[in-house]
Image (cartoon, rainbow, N blue to C red; front, top):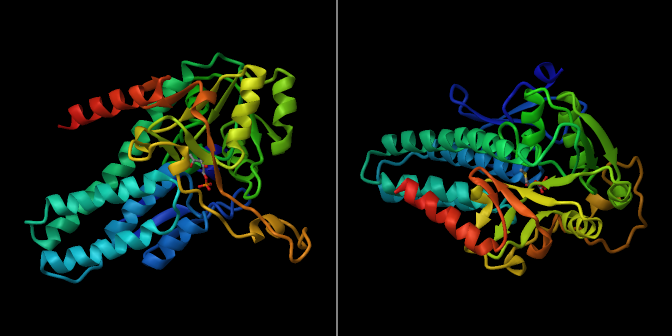
Length: 360
Ligand code: MRU
């Protein structure tokens, strides 16, 4: 079923068509439809509208989007090319504010252009093409490694709770929080996964449930307000969630509802892990209060998914897309380099330090 229904990478580049190729996640689970997007406006809109979503997938989509923008720039001189490239970068960066992977990937692309500025524009474009594909390919390897490290925390038959979608639909393949589950499935293991529906955009019901069921996982969908009861019942051995930005002190932004789940986990003594590529750790953001939280339209709460509006006209709506989990509630971060534990700032410094040493 998996192969038939979802055998594509979530994000890709079609060189023949000069297009970003994504699975339109707003149509899931009922329709698996690939979108081929070439115009910058459509690519930015796809990120804003969550046709492509999830921190790693947004980063890869933006990198490919910036390559496509660069490829369309008609300029011979570096200064002219760079000016237009910066405009395109700022435009894509304005799509969503919280997931740091968007900015991380765009910065990586800009750095490659700058490093190659002495080359002919044609060759700079080639370097940007290769970097965008490198970012995509690295994501696959990084998520698989997250899966390996996360799997070490699981035993066959375990109950796992997750929130939002940090599965393969949120990355290129595997995902982060669901990578251990998918990898375990590849090895014949079985888990019981509980997925919160994740109001208001239902990423848990529409996306996590879809990809888990497609992978043959024993999946139970619960409304967000049922998590406490499920934990109290003792059905969950571990909570795995993804994240959008990790501050230097370990405070972590993820889909709205995550911090409440972490508080419940502490109460019931259930281990609570964020699964994330190291690119989601943002040492330039000191603590959770410094993370910009995206506010989204009120209609997502009052109207979307209902046949008729379900709240009175004139009611005020608070619709933050993310919340911040305090570092004290977090058991650890499952990264591609292993599991990081408190004190987080030191663990992050060591990880970033070794990555810089490897790159240099
Ligand atoms: O608004 P979304 O659907 O982009 O939010 C996604 C999440 O909050 C994910 O948990 C996070 O990006 C990690 S994805 C591996």
